[in-house]
Image (cartoon, rainbow, N blue to C red; front, side, top):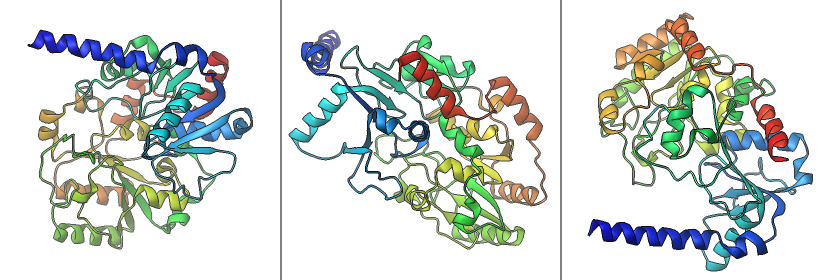
Length: 396
């Protein structure tokens, strides 16, 4: 039966590939001077940073630029009359046909989350990635599609990226993530914009344990408030009192893929929760927020690699480390590569806050060694470097 099912699946795959790419898509549909852009959430991550570089070079006049969006309500901070938007969630057969035509007829497709199949050799597909391997994603066997190239931060990550994306190592190009430009952005007074110009700010970015689509669970560790370390409102109130005393503000930003229905924590005077929509309303990217932060708290998120280059304190909540390792696992030996203040319990968290208030960074030397080991580009200008490469290599 297994052999029969394997045979059927191969036939179905060939039929699918034929429908994806055939004589019509290859030769009869014209490829236009248009660029499709994608990120999740939209107007974010590496794609958005490269898009800003495109606008700096007036590429809205060279190409028709089309952002893929998930609804028709475009935030005014992003909506432009010279940019097009296409709602991929809209129902209807004619809408789906129109979407396929857009994919078929675009000269460039640039994404950082979703994967698209090549319809013709006249197209160029670039996958910008949305984070370097930290958790073990090799089991997911993501559908890399037909991308001409994928961006990775250094040679150190190539092998694990290839495993996770189920593709060849020679598909990868080495560039600092474009989104990391935001870490160097001093054009905006971020602390003033969000109302905390006289306080130290810590951004807390936990990775998701339960995916919003309900199909993926990375850890079954019980977190009553939906966040690590702080399990009850009494401790949260104590934590807020400590933060207030030390004049530190914690900003919790849930992962975009997290099941936020499980989040039961509430705002306090010095403990705030911010969502993607809030950042949009502030006209800030996540990485611009990080640029104004005085420290980062995370766990198993690839933002760790990005934030390393700021040389600011990093705390890592590891209360569910064993459970996460068992269910999901890590791309590398976690404690050899991921250095920072390890937070296993509430007291550890309070000690980290106390040290931060005294400008004590206990793990700085270890983190500097990791920057060198990973061979990370710490000089900035990442979007321009990648943009110039695409122009030279693909006549972008």
